[in-house]
Image (cartoon, rainbow, N blue to C red; front, side, top):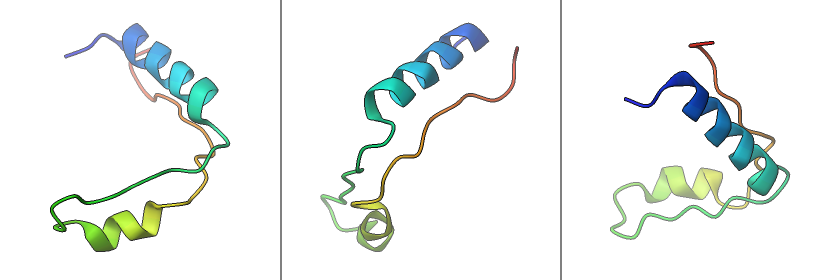
Amino acid sequence: MPEGHTLHRLAADHDQRFGGRPVRAASPQGKFAASAALLDGAVLEGAEAHGKH
């Protein structure tokens, strides 16, 4: 289980690198194709961690 500071750092990294950019989602085996289609092309508004400090 990662520590809180690790989760907050990862969230900040994701927010900086991917925030404001479109998401690519796929279901290679097809099991989650409908859900992936809902996400594919959507813009990631941001990432943040909640909890543990």
